[in-house]
Amino acid sequence: MARIVMKFGGTSVADLDRIRNVAERVRREVEAGNEVAVVVSAMSGTTNQLVGWCQSLSPLHDAREYDTVVSTGEQITAGLVAIALQTLGIEARSWAGWQVPIHTDGAHGKARIERIEGSELVRRMGQGQVAVVTGFQGIGPDNRITTLGRGGSDTSAVALAAALKADRCDIYTDVDGIYTTDPRMVPKARKLERISFEEMLELASVGAKVLQTRSVELAMKERVRVQVLSSFQDLPGTLVVDEEEIVEKEIVSGIAYSRDEAKLTVRRVPDRPGVAAAVFTTLADQNVNVDMIVQNISDEGMTDMTFTVGKTDLALAQAALADKRSEIGYADLLADTNVAKISVVGVGMRSHAGIASTMFKALAEKGINIQVISTSEIKVSILIASDYTELAVRSLHTAYGLDAA
Image (cartoon, rainbow, N blue to C red; front, side, top):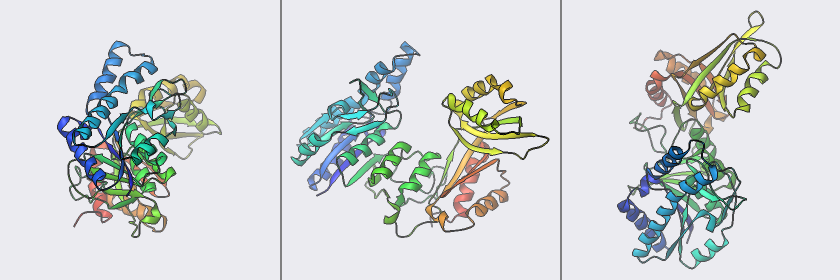
């Protein structure tokens, strides 16, 4: 017998037929003798509607009341899934985040989980009751409902699995696992049987949409084995596990891309100590995250700095730097939104040379110019013109031998 947390996203519970399908999947685990907790998202489209209502009433709405409104989507789903399970003869009850309770900090709209008191859930699961828990939410220090931000249901599921000491956290979605790259872009992409926490975290952080970054961080920290499966097909999924559980380590496990980046170049900055601190402190003060950074060689005491920010932060970054222009002393500020970040990820990079040279050679053969480069121990990322995204991903997928036979 195992203890399993099963998480179902918005597309998996989009209507009553799909909720019945979820109940059938849960029933199979119960009949196999497993203790089961289910974590659910709001039905597809519900959260967007609730957010829209709040924004329509007041663009500067009270974040505490916003959380009260948007958290109701998961509550509806939890109740419906519990009813569907009861209809199948399975004892089940719904739990809102505050009832578990899932304690968070007080950052409404983007709260972080601090602790989960799961003893009552464990007791009831031991008696054969299925716990259907609302994802995406908890209770803050002031006893107000909080939400975890977009993608928070994945984080809720992993945190609950850690608190319940579950054997596994199964995340059901509209894809049947984790692929070497986006199969919609590269039909020859292969589904991975296993991938390490570290590789999945890198892939999630650079554009792969299968798992939310915070959930992978938490799974790695708490050593929660995560499985990604399809809600709509009975196929083996992909396990996200410790690197030690993977016998045959791929040199490159996956290629991710993101078109959500914008490139900023601060031209003709005085090349003196403290100027980089002035530029990036200005952005940090506005909570603008900076990703890739490159600084040119000094020429006549002046240099250029190029870096990337999220497209949604571009206007804020430009305004913040414009306010500090006289203090920083730059000549021009250039922005480019027609860029894409391509990343190659694999734990095998630690022990194999030539990963970067393979990348650069493959792109050069296709006439693709590289604008910015950044690396980590298991990742190489480049910035290119957005128009070449698909060509770059396909070329690299082939160059690293990832194409399915």
